[in-house]
Length: 495
Picture (spheres, rainbow, N blue to C red):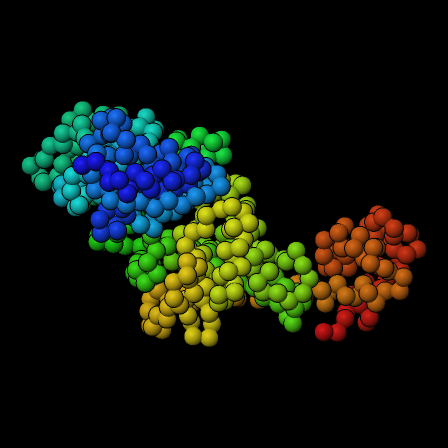
């Protein structure tokens, strides 16, 4: 079937600028999303008879279904690349998925129905009952990792031929080969399943490491304007994320369910998140009548506080009471740093507040030219969920496990921010004692605090140590030491 005159006319009016095109069928469904350096040149290839003979069978099938298309112009190829990826994730077009699968990258398959599950390499998903890891772009690295797993966990790969013993146990290898050195060679099926669980957890962690590596490679390729390579890596990243999400669902169907898994899965469903929110970060702003303005960020991993990743911020860009500007500043600082360090963004960002706070957080991402992950606000009055993508607000029941998890995270961020605020106020009160010492101006007060680090260390300093601070003479040091002495009734300020 050739392209209709209307389609050909529409192609002729396309601009020669970067953009994204969306191919549609007769019902208006999006079949395929693609990017183009020059929209007119790229889209015309789908309807040029001489080129159609060069297309693969799947592309020819796609072309036969196209009855219309839309285009979106952008300013540059990098912007087209980002928009293409965003639209693929939003619409999940059939032919984009087929093309990703058709790359036939290696995957690892583990079949739980086997008495002794083996770790096999495959390029095709054979059934929905097995657990898959991948796809993996670096086959040599994957094979080395499997060899490492066999040595470390004593699991079987596809070349194994275990033998059942008269007592019901299994002998994994007749030659007790070196790869399972340190592990018993004759074990029960239950004992072997424990090894498989450990090896799966290890491979799952490796998959996430590779996901971060591939994401960094994709961003580097886009920065270097190697757009075809960036698009290829982006497709692998999408496919690997999809597989990791399927692996999480697989785990929920088996005994090794992690804590708070149900809350995470119900939250994912309620918010229509593309992936399980394994990693979430929540921001809160705290101040006292516009003074001592600070912010906190808490990180939850697998539904639980991950305090090693907590962060707190002093507001630097302005003085005063403006929650929106404060939110924009701290969100920007947090994710600029993650971007510069090549680290992955969280699966979900939560801000304490309503539409204004959500808009401020989005503004920070726009300023960074960085695509935000899923983001919501949690408005306190009715515990209303505010979406960043213009969906209407959502009210979950107060007994909803997902909402309760959001509340725990929001309350933890609030507690952490208030603690930081209280610490600053307490420190300010303690440091205000220096303002009562005659002749000690702001320059020398700052020099003293910078030198000793805290008022407690300053009060414990000797006359000699005080005299080492620039601007503090011998006589002044003696008088200051006497003033700060613990038994001096004027040395402890009232609250």
